Image (cartoon, rainbow, N blue to C red):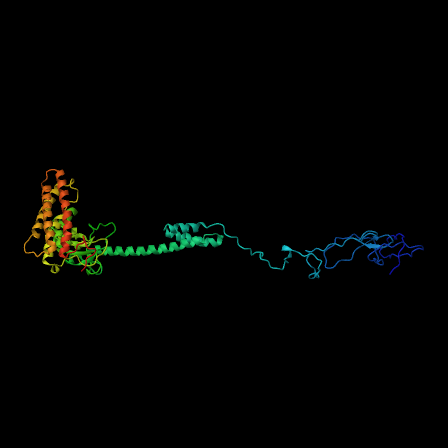
Length: 483
């Protein structure tokens, strides 16, 4: 350890090869030395105080530069506290600085980082750079809405196209509406399938229509209208779109057993007047002639008209223009129901009727035949036609009374009294019909026709009692015919 230096001034700087020699202290009391932390070496040659460069970050602290000698001839490090001053506080350590050469030793007094600062760069957090969570979709895809709407409106091809576009766009654009797109897709697919099935069905039906209208070849299992016989039951042939059942051209029908469901039954045949290449009659002429000719044929086939099912109406087939030119005049008289099928036959088996039953049914047949040809218009609209029809009804009423009064009929006891009462009512109705036929003014015609109809209603009530006594059906019409 060197001795204390005197207060003499520091020698002038010398050249670089010179050394600074320290003089001995003079006699006398030595001054109180200034407190220093550590003596600086003085044996090294110096030329002049060098400027202090800016510190650079290094791994280890560099030695402090020397400053000019302080009082007492001693040099002190640059930045050291001046003699007599309070020592400077050491600089605070940076808690965020990157450790050099490894993590610093554990210091319990060192402040602890909190929050996001506590996550070191090497740690993994929930939000990684480049892997952000996608935002929730907020916009509904327009094609998805269009797919749903067009699907509900049965615009199936558009719904199918919109749904496919929406399903492609939704994941790319992060949009809502996948459920609507799927609904539109399903609706579109089902609609297309239903359309195809309907198209195939209509095509098949149209093909069958063409076969039924073909004059040369009919569908399998069918027979020509000309080959039908009385008693045949058949299915109603399909009609083309826009065709009227009364004017449709039919050449083939499918014959089925009467015990199976069917639309029609053949009652018999008749023939129109005219031979050779006569002019083809109008539809009105054919209808009037066919009705006049077929009514007795059907009455004889279905003697008990009350057994004909509801809806099974009188119908007929007449020759086409080409058939008429070739000499065909036959009219096929049938019972047909165009809306539903029936089972059983409407034919009345005479062999299973008693004498009283046959007599009663034959007697009322003429009356029913006359009643079926009533004019279509109102009385004041067709007065001449009603006068002619009233004359026919008067004759039918008197004939019925005569047939029911024939001798030799073994009437049941319960039917005899009702038959006498029915005869009196029918004679009163005949007189009313005669008055209508002989009337000279429309007012009298209308009054007498109304009176005769009221008596006919009364006779219908008596007919129910008579049929019940004879063991016949008492319903207005049976719900279905049985074999």
